[in-house]
Length: 570
Ligand code: OXT
Ligand code: ADP
Ligand code: MG
Image (cartoon, rainbow, N blue to C red):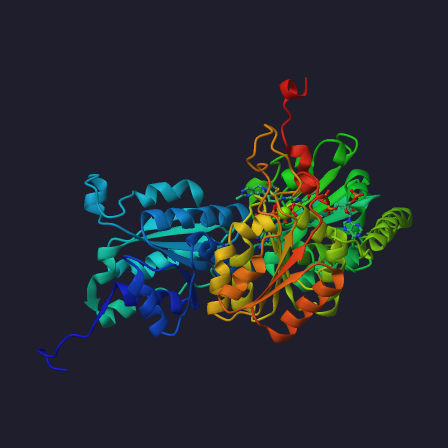
């Protein structure tokens, strides 16, 4: 081309899309509007999958779940101020769950925002985002998009994964630059989350603790599931012979039916063990902070902890053998060092765990067979347990209180990362976003088992499910309320109880409103038929399952966390 030939140009819109694609990010979870509407359209035009939601929180939850399932940051895209804030809950939740996610938000004109001159959707989003994520960046020049996206990706996935915020002022998207220089400005992130092996001394320390163990236990968390070192984890469990306890989203990393699975002897295993190997699981509220009666005699435990984040060590209790690194590398190093060290748990301990688990499983089995009308949780979950046993490739999404706690212990998971739930925060409303992301990222069938309250936080996304024609079967456990549907107004007035909903609500008709299949079921047989039909056809389906309003417990298994009023009781 001669000197007068027109220069080929690119712009902020296209550089951002090119930067994501260069790094193999091919899906955006989106809610359109000023200033990012065209960004979504151009992304679609450039071959990206753009999934548009009805509310940013669910687009955000979907992005975070995509991050969890793929080890690549899930991307959520929102408009400025209100859209941004709707997405922020999901960004914070991703960070809390240690899942990689990037929230890309359009923002208003900086010079107006910074002088508080009242711009359209004015907000200092960068400052707002900071406390809720691992890192937050703002782009001013299109020429910096390549490096900014690279930084965002590396921040999200390296070390302990988490949420990253990327602020894109509307004006920046329209900035043009020479197309060749633009292409040169893009950055491909090399080895975004480098593997990390602990020093030999740290491994030797762990082996010494394991050699002394009389009643050892392995606790597997969602950090291990995230790591995708499924074979190595299995080898560590099987070579050591230790019983293992999966945290809820680690269920299926080894099948729940594995002979070493101690899930059905959870309380006993935690209380009576003497050495506990933590594998990508924090010793937080879900494990009573490693203290108290759940853990038996004070000081009676030694912990070995594998975690990518050094600062996690000693967060609640002393860690006798910290192993800082990724689960795969640490587990590999442990397995290699275990050779010829005579590590094998005493038979009495294995028998003790096995006996307790068998007793609990038998007790459970008898409760699952009932044909009560209305259905109780066990009757309905017995059906869903069987469905998943028969179709173990189905990804299970689960939220609620009783619906969550009972499904967790009743439904066996057989494959890694096939259970997604409320996570570290116990947050309601993740269900539809998680189901959509699971379906989009894996192409598999999804079964979302939802309390009626939980579903209410995200129910409008059934339209999204229908619009993209996703093979998702939502089962709403409809007990007319939060925890129970038979609450009373403590003031005696005519307002309903604070925890009650419209009785016998027809959630199934919500799905029908958008062209999906709805079913209202009252018996285990009807439930089985409706769910099997949905998983066979792959059609978007909502099964509204009538559950006894009196069957649930306040807050499910965690009622002990509710504060009590001494005055009211007096
Ligand atoms: O060993 P023991 O004897 O102890 O027995 C254990 C196991 O051994 C045994 N077990 C088994 N037995 C036989 N066979 C098998 N296979 C088996 N497996 C296990 O069973 C017992 C129990 O085992 P488990 O479950 O493993 O152990 P445990 O003790 O429960 O574990 C402790 C925890 C803490 C790890 C576990 O409980 C846990 O993970 N809990 C998570 C709880 C959680 O996060 N709950 C959600 C939040 S509750 C509340 O906050 C809700 N809100 C408020 C709200 C929220 N959250 N978010 C937002 C944005 N706004 C508001 C609301 C609104 S819940 C809620 C709605 C609820 O209403 P819904 O209508 O949605 O739901 P319903 O309640 O159904 O009406
Ligand atoms: P759970 O809720 O299942 O108990 P947590 O979310 O509490 O699990 O803990 C997950 C832990 O895993 C976090 O402390 C996090 O730093 C760690 N983690 C995340 N990814 C990895 C990885 N690849 N290797 C090792 N640890 C990891
Ligand atoms: Mg309910």
